[in-house]
Image (tube, rainbow, N blue to C red; front, side, top):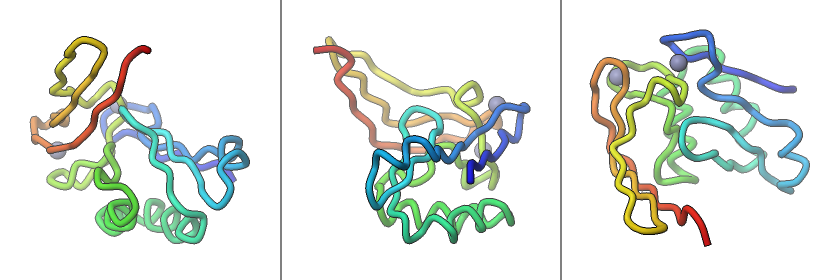
Length: 122
Ligand SMILES: [Zn+2]
Ligand SMILES: [Zn+2]
């Protein structure tokens, strides 16, 4: 089942569970979100989706954090809401071929610390 969870500030999805990509990730499923996709183990999928659907965002984030240090990037713990990529302002630094993101601000200006580095090109 494909599942989408909307942004609290616009109609776009903040999180989207991808059933197609899941087939390419044995034992895992993929969650599209701001900045970086979340790859979680299949055994938590039902619980994760049920929590998101019932407003248990903090618990869903805790499940994600157990498998990925950034947890649900789209989730602001201060607002207890999800936001799409257009509603996060990334505090990023481009250093040669590297993109480093250490924080992001939600539409309410809450600062969320994150730890993300990516090589932009080879
Ligand atoms: Zn917030
Ligand atoms: Zn949005």
